[in-house]
Each structure stands twice: as C-alpha cells, then as structure tokens.
Image 1 (cartoon, rainbow, N blue to C red):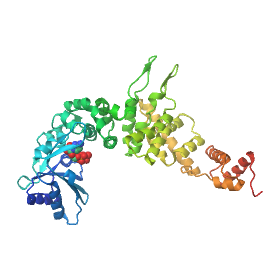
Image 2 (cartoon, rainbow, N blue to C red):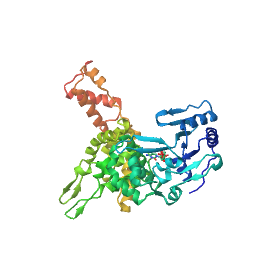
Image 3 (tube, protein in one colour):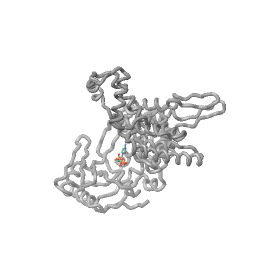
Image 4 (cartoon, helix red, strand yellow):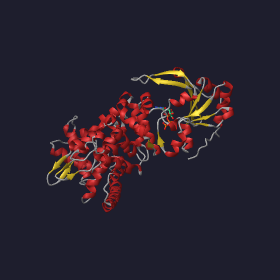
Length: 472
Ligand code: CTP
C-alpha cells in the first residue's frame, strides 16, 4: 500500500484555486482517498468544503470549462458535475444526526472533523487537503491508514451510533470486507449482530445494490458467510439461510447446501463475470429444503428441487427488486435445467438427449455448462477429473449436433398458419398436437429439421386426426 495521494490530475488544481477564491477550506474525501491508497481506480471524487458546496462546484466548473453543466440539489446542499470520465460531487461539511426510525437526517453546518465523524468506516473517513498551505496533506483522525494497512473495517465512532445513523452500513461493512478481502473488527461486527434487525428500515433497492456488489466480488462466499454469521441473511434472504445445516438419519447426513451453494458461486467466478449467471448459482439448489426426503436403503433425495426452485425465482426477484424481464427468465431457465448436463454425463449420450437439451437451452447452453461445471464440488479429485472430461465430450457432441441440426434457435419448420391453410381449419387443439409431434420427431431424430420432411409428417398426422388437405 502507498501512503501518498496522487493529486497530479489537473482537476485538483482547479478546485484548489476555486476554494482559495471562495475562502472555503476544501478537501477530497471518502472512497477516492481510500482507493488512491489502495491503488484502485476511482472515477467518483467527493469534495467537502467548510462553506457552500454549491458555490464551490459552480466556481470550479466555470474554471475548468464554462460549458460544464452543474446539477444542484438545493435541499441537500450538494452539487455535482462530470468532467470527461470523472464524476465530481461537492458538499459543505455537516454535522448530521438521524432520528431513530427514519433515514431523514437533521443537518447543521459543521467542520471537517464533524464531517469525518459521521462517515461509515475509518478507511472512508480520510481526507486530503486542497488548501494552499497544506496541499496534499492527509487528515486521518481515526487511523484509517493503519486500518487500510492491516486490512480492517472499523467504524470511526461507537459502531452502535454509526450503524444506527444508517443501518445500510452493516451491509456496506460486509461488502467492503468482501471486495477488499478485509476483516471486520470485533466490536464493529458484534454491533452488526446486535443491530441486524434495523436493516428492515432500509429500502430493498439499497440492500440489493450492496448484495449485487458482494455477488460480483472475486470471492462472494466471504460476504455470504458474514451475512449469515451476523444475522442479516435470515432477514434479507431467508430462503438462502434455510439452505444451512445438515440432517442425519440412520447415520447418513447430506451435504450442507449453504456451503455447497457458496462453493458453486466461488467456482463460477473463475469462468464468468455475469451477475445473472451468478444469481443462477445462488438459486440453483434453493428449493432443496422443502423437497428433502430420506429414502431408506438409498439416502437423502431432493426430487424436483430444480422445478420448484425455478418456480420460486420470480417471487424472489420481485421481492429483491431485481429486474423481472429477460434476466429473471434466464435465471429461471438455468435453475430449471441445472441437472440436465450432469445427467447426460452419467449415461450413454444419445443424439436425441443432446438435441433435447440444445432445444431447451438455446443460446444459453454455454452458460448452463459453466454453471454445471461449477456445480461439481466433490473433494475427490479423480471424480472431478472424470466429470470434467465427460463435460468436454458433451460440449464436442453438442457442437456436432448443433452444426448438423441447428436447433439452438428452433423455429418450427411448419407454422400454425400453414397447418390451418393446408387443412382449411380454424385455430384448434389439432394444430398444437401436430406442431408438438413434429418437434418431438425432430428431437428424436425421426425426421430432419427441414421443411419438406416436416410437411410430409404434417400430412400424415393430419390424416390420423381425420383432416384432409383442401386442395385434394
Ligand atoms: N458514506 C457513509 N455512509 C454511507 C454511504 C457512504 O458514510 N451509508 C460515505 C463514506 O465516507 C464513503 C462516501 O460516503 O466513502 C462515498 O460513498 P459511496 O460513493 O457510496 O461509496 P464509496 O466509499 O465511494 O465506495 P463505492 O464507490 O465502492 O460504493
């Protein structure tokens, strides 16, 4: 870690000059200072001045480029503008305190120290001076630099106060611990445990934002384990909490599905950065608890968990305020199909089984295979190797079948309209029957995925159903 802040970007000189002219002591603060010290890229910079943040923003923007557009939030006393790829936010230093059951703060003007006191963590409470005489000096009242070096998340004040001011900070602590691979200091973590119920006053959108950041981290399991240990998981995601635990019967236990799910998720991060595929990993076994059964002489079974799990996806997405469009449908499909590729590796692979999978997975087949590979969590290395080799065979064969039959984006070679025209019939059950049987015949390899063969079959099926082509 470095302990110098690089203020080489021209933006700092402009803001420093504007600060000097306004007579406001001004500092770059928060995440930007933290990320500079960690040598992480940061495009959002927050500035605090002892005075009017709005006036400072307007002055600074004028100096940089008079055409810049400054957005002012009068009620909050903040102003914001973009310059090239930078997002710059200005605020006057404040003393802030919150009422217990509301997020609405009572705001008063304050000093830099007041502003630092009300920040979430010591590593986020660092400030760097932009004032002429002390330019570049780090102001670190809570030993944030030391905490950065020791990889510790800690609140600047009594954690009960900091978390009570904004309970979302409990999730933020866990999110930072996950993203940065830091440890949450004991007192701070104990306070999260004590205050976890307070998360209920936070909007679902803010909670989900933090959850998604945890999911997109390199090792998301760090965050989920902390969420579980703190008591937050059972409040924000009870279905996932229910995955935890092992039941024993007649000396036979099943695996703990919470830790298994986390391992699948961590495995997947090595091959995919896709948030939705990661959600599919989180939800793939979500319905195991209610489908669990002990079958004497056999052991634990979870029959139908993929079907029930996929049925749960829309309600979980709705509650989490996640998008209800194609992203949700994709996750639902992945959960529904997650057992299929592995089932293929266990038996003789037939072309019709491959065609059926291609037909159902469509363009998402590669994502499905990635999810299934991540789902192999056995500790037995030989077994892992065997599965992975078989997966390669499945991949190869899927490629061959796809090249031959082009089933990925299957369009029925004979449409409903053509069936109606040919037999002179109105919309009816028979049309569905004919289309379904043609599709099945293509998947089973009885006919090719081509118009002539499908048309011939349609005539045969029509005859069986007592239909006659009108041209005869
Ligand atoms: N902050 C806080 N309490 C919150 C949110 C933010 O005290 N609930 C403060 C922290 O000092 C933080 C700064 O506001 O550093 C900026 O917040 P934000 O942009 O949300 O977070 P960053 O720390 O910049 O991190 P990230 O961009 O990864 O969210």
